[in-house]
Amino acid sequence: MRKNTIIVLSLIVISIISVYIINQSALTPQQSAPRKELLVYCGITMIQPMSEIAAILEEQENIKISIIKGGSGNLLRSIKFNRLGDLYLPGSESYILQAKEEALIVESAHIGYNKAAIMVQEGNPKNIPAGVTALLDPELYIVIGNPDTGSIGKETKKILTAAGIFSDAMQNARELTTDSKRLIEVLKKGEADLVVNWYATATWPENAEHIDALPIEERFATKKKLILGLLKTSKHPKLAKKFMDYASSDKGRTIFERYGLYTVD
Image 1 (spheres, rainbow, N blue to C red):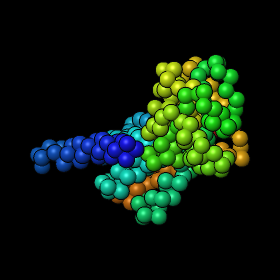
Image 2 (image 1 turned 120 degrees about the horizontal axis):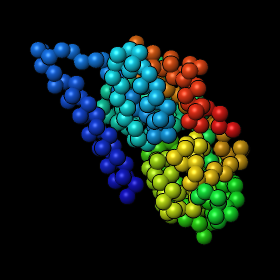
Image 3 (image 1 turned 45 degrees about the horizontal axis):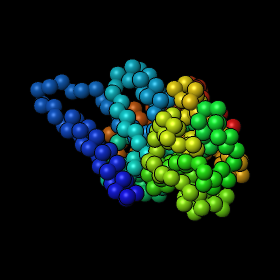
Image 4 (image 1 turned 90 degrees about the vertical axis):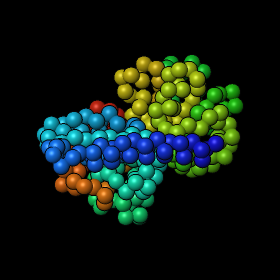
């Protein structure tokens, strides 16, 4: 089931990119050249600040910026398969390191931080305690991220492994899901009692009234760097570098801070 889900999600991303390629090649010689376009792969948790920065750069540079969002692992698989795109922002630095090992990244910049937290329904109606041992409670409906598809699933596995409870927690979980967006949805719809997700998502206005975040012990859950990578396949590396420079500047930091993606302690 997990492999089938990964295949379906990867095919969806590939289909989106195929449309992008067709649109790029559809112009006849008589038509005027379009604006230069950047293709950005972005983990779901960072889509809001990245979209805001994209809008600023589109106006400043008279360019178009397309953003493909998804689980960080699925996005990396798409980058490797399609060999197309300009920038990649996963939810965990480990994906950037993996991309560098495979010679997919030529330059990178630190732009923010992520940190995992336990999340419960607003007001914590079941009085769930903070700490990873809550994931072992058989009375709770627990949903966690799939380690193979997204950064939060990968981080959850690291946390639970460090705590020595990964196997038990996996057996106790009622559902594995692909990414942070779905983890938010199951709490807001009352379908789950507890999830592990990136802290930033609980601070957003559309979520804050529905979700409470509980801390995970610091020795298990440390803050993670968000690293934006310039892809080797970039058709417009100078423009991609301008995006990267803005995202890592004080102005960019202010934007990421507003979405809970810089000060996470």
